[in-house]
Length: 135
Image 1 (cartoon, rainbow, N blue to C red):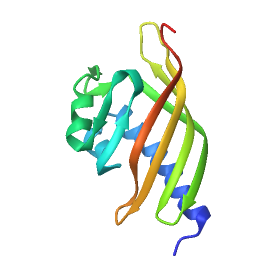
Image 2: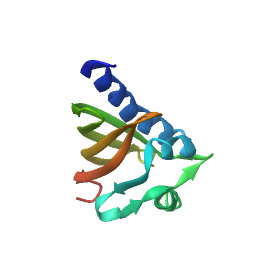
Image 3: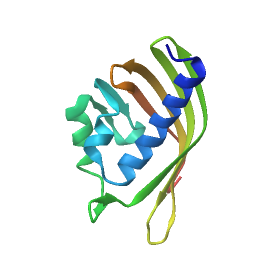
């Protein structure tokens, strides 16, 4: 049985994998980070449920050579583990390729996570837009 610290480390790796998979255009791997019934709430950009919903979200992502024109940076994560369930709150900064190069979003992720046979997965991920382009 893993210790709480090991579980927190695995969750922080999940948070990082979200960024790497999305930003590199590895969308199948990105979707695999969610439970089959997950909800991805992107505030004013919509609410997407399940794998079909996640794929629908991806249709509006601008790509260059198969990759989104953004980089996600997640930091200051506070993770709480309760058995096979966990929560995580993190700051997120999204940088767009431009032109000009700049910030698209400064906000927070509010996550509900569950441990599955394949490791920790997002059950819900809610984005809070604290500061965004044009605001």
